[in-house]
Length: 107
Image (cartoon, rainbow, N blue to C red):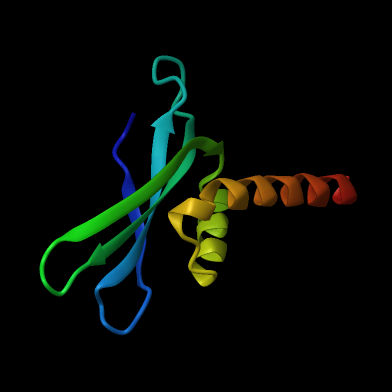
């Protein structure tokens, strides 16, 4: 697996102690035969406590998108909603279903 790429960091409050990181996870499908890539996503929530210490929660789903523009479009939509790691799976499922419905209507 290739390295994760930080797409955007968003503060969840004014204190700057809570933030969400949104990552793109690029993976080569088959480096021997072609340069095709697929893309996964990862959301990481970090909370830093004033007295010291922090908690980090993250969820990752690999191989969801096959076009970079699709993963960017998805991430922009979840960033607007401030989607947290716990909601990642449900959000991806909903997005895929909506994309399939949109493709059927345009076919």
